[in-house]
Amino acid sequence: MRAAFRPKVTEVPQSKIVGAVMILHQILRLSSLFRSAVSVHLRRNIGFSAIAFNKAKELDPVQKLFLDKIREYNTKSKQAGGPVDVGPEFQKDMNESLARLQRMYGEGDLTKFPEFKFEEPNFEETPK
Image 1: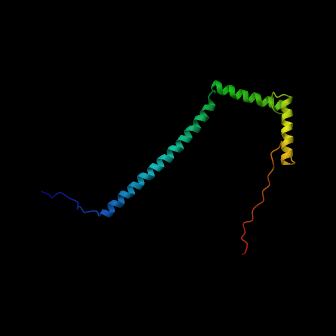
Image 2: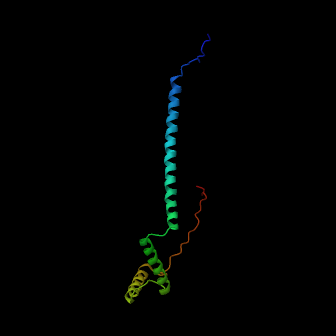
Image 3: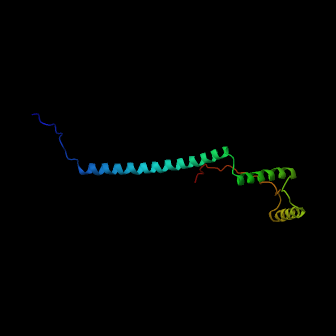
């Protein structure tokens, strides 16, 4: 009879077992971080895809009505050259408000967005 082959069993030091367990814990923790990052990424992409696919379909009636009203107001506003369906008292209130702001804050055209000019800062060291 032949003797069965038995591999030599050696005892693994405790420090190596603890090290292997710590490495395993780190791998599992990193995999959970990776999993959560992937899940956030997929959620965002699915949300964006839903919007993109929704544009291809017909809008629901409330959305369609809302967009139609916005487009209608836009064309009326361009034709009127300003706010739509306002009376003379709106223009009077607007002029009074502009005059009051003009007195408070000085000169300049209050109907235009201001222009800002920024100078580049000097980052060079000065000798002490």
